[in-house]
Structure formats: structure tokens, C-alpha cells
Image 1 (tube, rainbow, N blue to C red):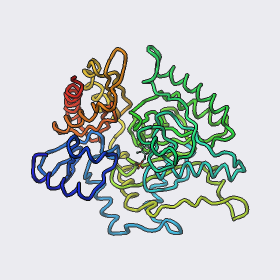
Image 2 (image 1 turned 90 degrees about the horizontal axis):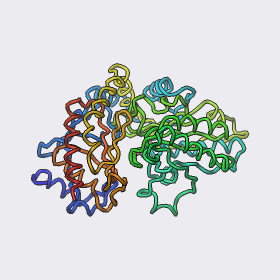
Image 3 (image 1 turned 120 degrees about the horizontal axis):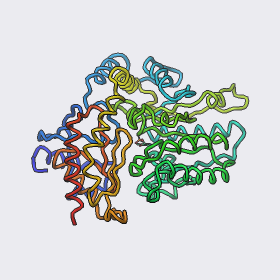
Image 4 (image 1 turned 180 degrees about the vertical axis):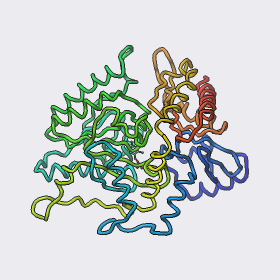
Length: 453
Ligand SMILES: *Cc1c(COP(=O)(O)O)cnc(C)c1O
């Protein structure tokens, strides 16, 4: 941080802020802190005028660029009407229209929208609703959740409990409810020569055994369909989801699909579940829901679940979960403007072209001596670094190769924030083919730099 405009800002910040997902001491030396003055499209600009390509969509939320004129306009118009209103006993146009449109767009059978105001809260809603449904059905013994190895569902205590990323979970383990963990379906764990499909089938069989043993006490299985993002961009074959749906039906447990990161076109289809032609019992959406503008989440569910709470105080009890900013009108308008863009701009078709460019531009990385796998699912491309290509031995995280990649890429003007040893592209959909090619060049150079011994 050479320039004084940035440095002055950084000093003010470090006196008063405590940043997320950060060992603050790293800001003394190895981790720069970059004040952003403005954004436009895929670019962020700091106070010195230096620009950074936001290749990770600001933690996976941004879909159509920063300061998108159409989303800006929608929020501005709503601001003059109504900024917020309590959603209990009251309602408003944006939340009703958004619900109608989400129900029309999501997999069949999802007919009810329950709102919260961030992803983790949406997960809390889904797990409480699932438990409460079974309770209302007279099945009080169903209290457990079946979770998938490497899954991530947020960091509030309930959401953390149903995740399986040690980095976030281990320390808080004494505070968390007990869960049952099924082995990962991700193809990166397959034996040499075993296909993603074959591995998915094998792991579905393993899952079925666990379900058969525990069906009486399990409320639901929770999964990130197709890509387990925070757990290292680990991808599985859609076959696993089809098998999971069938197993859940057979053993009478719910399927919670957490599409908070993969929803809204990330994986190639509007929702990842579409690729397995399944409908979950609960679908959690957030992040891209508002195009990356405002915090909002929604849980969609079936009428049969809704009906299990509908009563006049005789037998069933109502779902009393509440958040102050539930269904905020400004956030709903940002979401509606985002859906408008999907409707008018051939986004999914264009993403196919961009995904092909990402695939092509990163080909040279396949042969890099410190890359063990390059994997892709639509608009997510992940590059796994390794110490030894032949043995697939990975780097100890304490070597901090990922941070070295991050710093080198920042110098070049690209925001690539690796997850441990996994460098990935998850860019806004308004990125151009030329920008993707440039990004791939920066990624190659940064990986090459960071893996030199
Ligand atoms: C980010 C994320 C969450 C949590 O959302 P927050 O808004 O950060 O609380 C949950 N699930 C998945 C799959 C996510 O990627």
C-alpha cells in the first residue's frame, strides 16, 4: 500500500474495525487491506485509482456487476415509496411479486416463500421448519440432521452445526448440535480411473446405508447441490442428487437444498437442482438473489409442509421464527430487477459461452507441476494446487500458498481470493471473454510465483 490515500484509510480502519474471516494480525504485514472507493461492472477501484477485477463476485454475491444501472434504478424508485415495513401483519408489493416470480422459476412443487435476511438465517429457518414439521406430525423423535462431508451452510450456530468445514467449525464444536455426517460425493476424491458418475453412485450407496440406520431420528439431509463451495469448490455428479431425492422419499426424510451460492445461474442452469430434475423439500436462496446488492434470503417449501403448520390452535403450532428485516422492500426490488435481467438478457446462454472461454483459457494450468485438478461447473472454475502432482499430496495450509497467490494477483489487479489451496474464478456474469483470458494469465503467473520453492 504505497499510496498515502490508501494508507490513511487503512490506518483509520485498523483502529476501529474487526474484519470477517481474518486473522487481524495478518494486516500488519502479509495481508494488504484495500479501501474501495467505487465499483463499476466487474471492476473495483481504490483511492489511488488502481483497479481490481472482482473475479470472486465479492464473496459470490454479485451477478451483474457493481453499480448496475438497472438494479440501482429499481432500488432508487423503491426508496421514494417505502424503505421497510414489518412483515408480520403487514405486506407490500415487492415481496408478493418476488414470491410469485420465485415460485414460477424454481423446481415444481415449491409453492411457499419464507423470508429471512441473510444466508445463514435462511438455513436456520429450513432446519427449524423441518424439525418442527415432524414434531407437528407427531414425530418428536426426529431431531437429527444428516450432513455431507465438506458442506458449508453459514456460520451461525445452527448453520455451522450442519456444515463440515473444520476451519470454521472445530473451535465451536462444544456449542453445536450433534449431526450425522455422510461421506463426500465430490469427484475430486474418486479413485484413479473412477468417473465422477461412478463415484457419485458409490457414495450414494454409502449414504443410503447411513439413512437406513438413522431414518427414525433424522429430520432432513442438507446439501449444496453440484458444488460445495466454501469447502473447496468440490463438485459432484448430478446423479448423486437424483439418488439422494429417491433415498429421502423412501425413508421419509426431508431434502434441504442449499442453493445460496450455486443458485441463479452459477452452475449453468438457473438452479443446480434442475440438472438432476429434482425438487427439494426446502430450497434456500440468498447471495445472488439480490444481484449482490442487499442482504436477503428466502426458503421455498411445499404446500404439504405449509399445511402441517396451518391450524386454529387445536393441535399444530405455528412457525414463529422472525427477523427484523424480513422481506425488506429495497432488497426485494433489487431481487426483482435481478430477475428482470435474467428474463431479458439471455444470461444462461451467454454464461455458456463465458464458461467455455474459462475452460479454454485455463488449459495451460492443467500441465502446471503444482496443479492437481482443474474442475469446472458452469460459471465456477476451480484450480487445486498441490505440492506433488504425481502423488496429489497437498500443501500444508501453514505454507499459505493461497495467500501468496492472492497477493500476487492483487498486484496485477485481480481479486482472486483462494480457499486454502484452491484458486477459483466465480466472476460476475458481465465479465467479457477478453477479461477472462486476462484473468487466466494473471492466475497462471500468480500460481507459478506462489508455488516456486
Ligand atoms: C455463503 C453461504 C451461506 C451463508 O450465507 P451468509 O449470508 O454468508 O450467512 C450458506 N450456504 C452456502 C452454500 C453459502 O455459500
